[in-house]
Length: 212
Length: 211
Image (cartoon, rainbow over all chains, first blue to last red; front, side):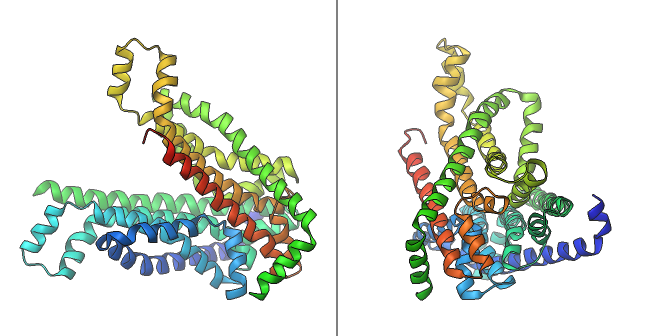
């Protein structure tokens, strides 16, 4: 514990690096995953092949994936973000797709009957109804990025994994312990925080449905 | 492509080292999976029947799942030291939550009316468990084992850092030399192993009569 307190500056900096990496992965994952899910919800025949490919990508062990990306992207944060965003697609798209496809067709029919355009139907009906499942995906993406992000320190992507790897190499047990504690705190906080959003979104939808 | 040719050449020149590392990797993964099955499966069965404490135990294991695998593995070093056994213990701990939680959800997911009619037919508790509940829970349990297998195979690569051996040795060695082909000799077989395990478990799941 004393290492953590005496080196609060360093641990804090690595903590922020880790957070930044995670948020960047989430950003890219959402930019790719949201449209991909919308396309898959409309083109059912694409679901099998695309989810199959995403499943294969997700199976590749992270250290292997990072190594395989070195010839293309070298070392640093770029290959880490690429690999983590690729992993994130399965978690994000799978849940987002469940959210989109489990909307009662009668609701969409009613929206169309009210004269809503395609965009309006998406933003005002589909998106809010599928939001709780999207948030489940977001939480899984954040947790996996924090977890695998520690391994990304091996390819010089920074973050709290630096403490773990340096601790193991120099047999500095306090460093390992500090890294493990910091990354666990980050994971548990993120898990709890996003879960609160999930529940709020869930309540919002069911509340409004109940009133009509 | 040249890089893959170099990796293949390195593999050919270091075959004995490669097969030893691959063997270590498999032994490490299979033992960790086997031990965690032996321990977590009965606990999962037992927890499913304990209404009062089950939620607490499941929450603890769910929280454990959130702890990054690298942290679990590297924490073995201060407490257990370097080598094969510490790596094995850490990997076993890692495989614990998926097996336990899936056993629990599988048993809990059995339709109560099925259990009721079976006990109405005069089945004892032991018969209920072995002839109704476990067979119906098998698909959920297999999906848990499937997740645990991929996780163990991929984390066994990290065991190389704490002296556990395995295919990760090529990755650490290649990194120290900054030689990408050497790293690939470890990275590609590990990826193939993970994919193989995924294919194996999903084909078993497909063949199981109860879905």
